[in-house]
Amino acid sequence: MDESGVVNASKHEIVGEVTEVGSKLNKVKVGDKVGVGCMVGACHSCESCKNDHENYCPKVILTYNSIYHDGTFNYGGYSDAMVANERYIVHFPENMPLDSGAPLLCAGITVYSPLKYFGLAKPGKHIGVVGLGGLGHVAVKFAKAFGAKLTVISTSPSKKDEALEHLGADSFLVSRDPDQIQAAMNTMDGIIDTVSAVHPILPLLGLLKSHGTLVMVGVPDKPLELPVFPLLSGRKMVAGSGIGGMKETQEMIDFAAKHGITADIEVVSMDYVNTAMERLAKNDVRYKFVIDIGNTLAATKP
Image (tube, rainbow, N blue to C red; front, side, top):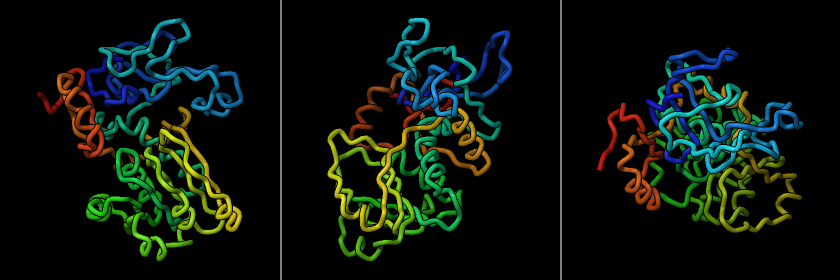
């Protein structure tokens, strides 16, 4: 696959055009728009692999900083070209743009999969999304496309207009405002928590209805405190979810194309990467940087 298109800055949301195919390949053809997400291999024999959950295979091979079956090192998106097994190729529909579609290969499937698995992808469900960043803004779009009532939960009151007016959320809660939290107690069927910083989850459990689920998809660098009594009193669950298998990832891309869902991005040139990383550390991006490896798009340059 020639990465003549774009590559997301995370190194594992890679898109481009097929330039050559193996003799036994039948999934894609030369010229197709395709992507490779977070993984490029697995054992294909364990229970997870047999159930199309390669992402949970104990021997999963990640797209970067990993060793492939043949002993070669995987560099991910910072490459001029990529060879991939057809099982790990995601076909992009014609109406799905490569640049703003690329982040869906990680961020998109990370929120799509738990919405489906935990029964939240249904009209009328009330879903909370914690954090309005790279994951959160995509979660809002998918939840709305499923017909859910959507509440964004954030520590930043300044994001209210963005959530309501730009992304189409139905309501906005400031998680540090006890009055707002109290008013929304026991109203949500599920919450997708995208925050990777340490934060209290007790207020979030209070927002859930009985039998509700709080799904963690962010990765805090320190353990979170888990209060047990709120779980017992409402038969509530705290769960985790990590990306999705290849079958579900293709399903997600097709659903996104049908409903016009893409990530909000800023395309940058390779020469701009160091500056982009500095801006990323300051949360100065809305919401994903995408690197144009092949210089085929209008990109921010130094």
